[in-house]
Image (cartoon, rainbow, N blue to C red; front, top):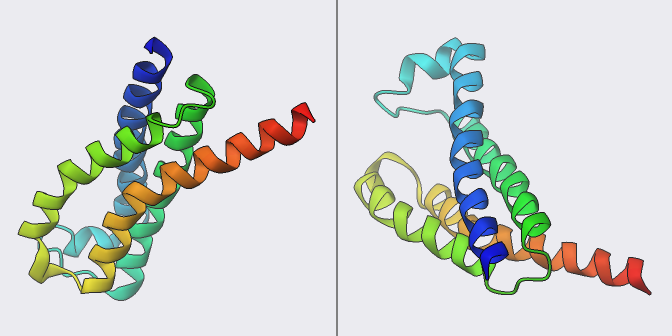
Length: 130
């Protein structure tokens, strides 16, 4: 139980830290992105970059979660549901700023990626044990 709680906390906090860090890199390395960030007037490549940074952060955070709570079936669900519960209201407020495909990918990835990583991690452990 303690490992599950620790895995969930690490997954959520690490996702946030990585997303903020990657966004900082995006802002400093892409002046055009930094210029439109406050207005959220992103081009399609900028939106794809934002989704890529979130995906990368979530993959790493989910991997860390599975290392702390290996084999847990509930930890990835909790991480996904907590992130989804936090970001649904945020994206509701941003609904007109982004196209539907952006919201659909981002919100669905919050639930899907932790589950995919946990499943893949379990599959690798089972194969190694065989």
